[in-house]
Length: 250
Ligand SMILES: Nc1nc2c(ncn2[C@@H]2O[C@H](COP(=O)(O)OP(=O)(O)OP(=O)(O)O)[C@@H](O)[C@H]2O)c(=O)[nH]1
Ligand SMILES: [Mg+2]
Image (cartoon, rainbow, N blue to C red):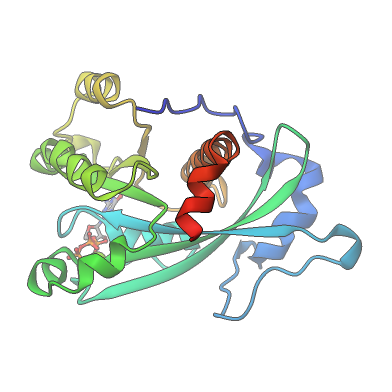
């Protein structure tokens, strides 16, 4: 298993709090909230400060009601649903996130396309899962702090996705409803044990959106960092075995 890089190995953590990042973050903000970009839109920098954009597809996995749609809305700066309305098919949401690479100080825009599919729809219609799996770069595995069965099912979910992938899949676990601590059903020691076994980052989400970008930075930076690491590993493999790549193209 390829080890997960410690936080901050590849990208500058908390960069959104630095003054010099303002000109980049201003491009994804509108009235202090994340801007929504249409299909053909993207953040525009002036020509002298042009920035490359890297594209990724992220699938959000987890049982019905765990908070997939809520998390997608939170990450994109959209209104968070108060009620549970089952997602009846696939819903995609695009999030742009500027990142500064540690290695060379280069800035990149990460374009994360979040794929959220209602769990019941996924069971009902067989054609949905293959579309979600096609060329997916990362999976966010959700469990709810208020539902122990969702936590206990994580291992199955992770194994299933690992079998389907060719070894190149970023995996991040997010515990939702962390704000409902009175009803917490998953202890810290369970999380520690899980992390020791799986070596997958475990993040927390929940509560009112209060800290602007700070609320989502941890999850978006973690995704960006692991996606970048995965790309570096892939690039290294190609440079060490160029004949494999050439063979694949024939
Ligand atoms: N308090 C709290 N409520 C949450 C949180 N995340 C989700 N919820 C609530 O949980 C309910 C279900 O959330 P959804 O995001 O609709 O669930 P889902 O995983 O998309 O469900 P399906 O579309 O049926 O698969 C909603 O009422 C949300 O408001 C959270 O972090 N904290
Ligand atoms: Mg949903």
